[in-house]
Image (tube, rainbow, N blue to C red; front, top):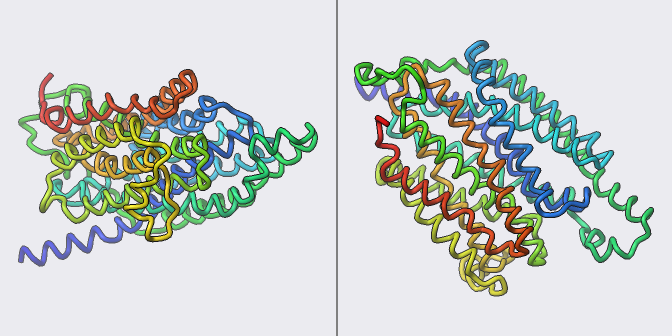
Length: 440
């Protein structure tokens, strides 16, 4: 009888996971496009390193500004309709890229990115607690890891597609090549590069509208969050979501995590460009590939061989070690890349670039592990708690700017990666002790 019930529960989770998995692919496609957009817009809009990283600020600050309003929207219209609304907002953001590309006006690019981030906010606020609640709590990190595989799989594909469609023939857009042109010739060449964005974003808009219709007419059920996450009512005397230390500290952990994840994924192209790495436009794919490897570890090992807390502890330790590798490794030697994958024909990269990419492996299991640990026993506070966790994504807006400031002001983009060390140190604290605290 118990086996029959388990089979029914398993079948009941397959369809929702497929639909949510499709949305996670969209998250990855839109989010990890930023890593290729940053060096592209640096050329098109003539930006310095700090200004170029406003791309990440405009995109991720939307999660802070819009998280609470979007949670109110979800409570009013439901999770499924909220996902449809989020996709619609993203379609508007994709449309805005077209006049931005035609005008090469940086502020319009930033508005388009903020709009995309707003749509993603409601999608993330709805989908992450949905995946946590859809099955047993102890395997929640495994399910989120499955979603992460799809998300980061998109992150591998996007830079390759972007490079093939947009970044071909970039030798004619180097500072030296542009300096040799007259003002009129330079403006014409930059406009030609910028207009390469128009057609891809037309396709993206059409895909988002089609996905809206798919989700709207799909049999995706509403999650019963109240029933699945109540826990022991006797242990819940709290009257405010801020009275749960495991949640508040989890928000801080996610703030630092998203910051280091974005630094590893979105600055690697700029860093490679500074080192004159030929394939700098595809370097985000390297970070995403290591993240996929980390998610495979999560899917195969959690919870059977690895607890969610233990996975988080290992992630923080690897993060500290790889950050030290970025700071003090060689920017000339390709020895590590030659050893790991040089024999496959994949272009090798300097050791410091590879350490930066390997942070993808360290980061992979942080998000899947923090969510179930932070939401443990939240019950009726789950929707608001999820919005607060989503607000932790603000780390992706602020910490890359902190890195960009130190990289630009010091002139040393390699040592500026020290900003990640305190971030991983806090994640390590949360993994060992923070998530266990139940009273302030």
